[in-house]
Image (cartoon, rainbow, N blue to C red):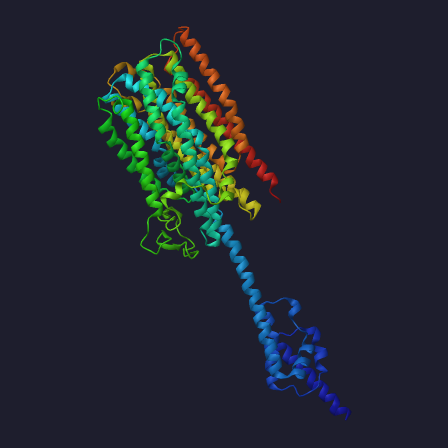
Length: 617
């Protein structure tokens, strides 16, 4: 008996050693396994092997693994069928763990891959088409200036200087609608794409259009009623005021006031498209509007009727083109596409809004995104004059109103002061020359202003990123660097274009004295253009990071300082000081631009350092 018992123990010992070697069993339980009862048959051995291998194959947690001796006892007690069920349940659990980990890893990789700094090439490729959007107002004014100068004479062209200053620069007071729309739509669109539901984006766009209509109506009424007061403030209240210039300017401003509701809605629609990174739609609309304006100038400006011809005719052409653009924009946003109602196309992939599903490729190119039909089935023309249905969304526009308006007032004050100095202390020839220079200048500056809009389209998504703070800081720093590089490139290109102004000045006037006065400003206008690239890119970067208080405070200072300096130029001109003229005004403005350039760069450097300190190591 002793011999048989001893041999049984030895046999079980070596059998378990062999089993452990075959199934990679942990050695600490081998000795205990050797003293299990005999009769461990092949079916149980197979299940034993499977149960031991499964945790290693599925890489489950160590706590899920049973020691060998307990595992075998469970097999002997419960049988193969019962433990097979346990084995299957264990596999399901471990598979879920693996899928969960893979899903989290995929999400992390996706987040890190979607947050990346736009390259200089991407910025430029987005900004160049966006130039057409910024060119809307300045291009229409340039067409007016050329048509009036060639068809109606120097006095009518001189009237455009104070009139366009009030109409165009005054419109900057409502620019908070454009800034707010771009930033809010960009944020809503970025969040909606993650949830495959564009309802918030659509609500934001509709609210922006409705608020724009209200703001445009109020601004248009205020501009029409205050036109005489504003023009006399610019031209001066003395006896030497030119009544022909004043009368023509009054007609122009009052007619342009009729188009302000359309202008504000158009600007907000453009900003909404840019917030969704659609630059083709507004560009197409603006090209058609410019063509209508040019056609209107040929029809109206040469008319002998004082209410329809001259400066008034140019105003009618602009207003008609603005309402044409408004109708085209609303039709574009509401147009039914080839797919079902409530759908639109992005890079050939259908995006359904009604059923809240987005079927886009992961690596789709955002440049091909189109807002065509985005409001179809959700917005009608009569809704434009209704109170916004989402007051919660409407309240989000308010934080932009005061800071951006203050910024706009500070920016406008320089142009208004410049126009006042030229109109009240210089000759009619200088006034006509100033209008040509200003129209040429405002038509070219959008080359750099488009960087401002581009930064507001890209930066908010990066600035509000809630993931890895270190990644956010790194990407934000690279984004700032790339935008400043793009601004420098744009500045050099614009400087080269402005340097060619003497070659085209003859297309704007037949008076040689006016042409000579225009050409005298080329040097300072070129330097101003050089700084403009970095100034506009920097301002867009600051707006994208919601540094509104700094911008508001800066332009509050400029509101007082720049007009004060220009008024000193006016006093010198009235005293008959030699060398004071149109060139002096632009010299002051160029110095002002260099100051802004330095301030924006220093502020951006400070913000990057602050973000780096706030990033946990």
